[in-house]
Image 1: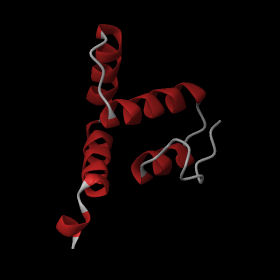
Image 2: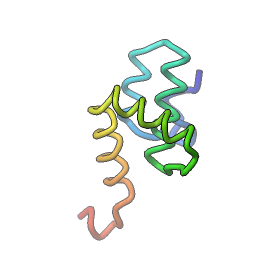
Image 3: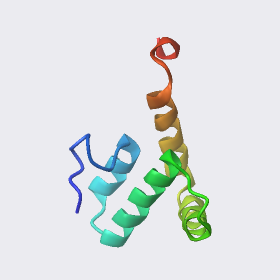
Image 4: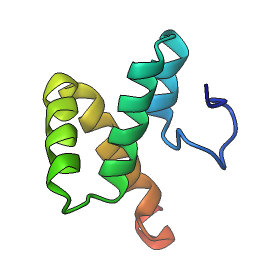
Length: 81
């Protein structure tokens, strides 16, 4: 399993780190890391889009948290102040 404390390795968002810290299921880990990567950089690949859609539908609150966190992280420094 990927260490959840190294900021240079996935998971990159606190929301996904928190959920993974509470779970110990390799399939869930794969799905949530995939979802996080998808939210950071969506793909036009149909299979990936379907997988992301299914995971997003099952985890709407987590998707919202990831999105909000990524927006905060990607705002220019002037807009954060």
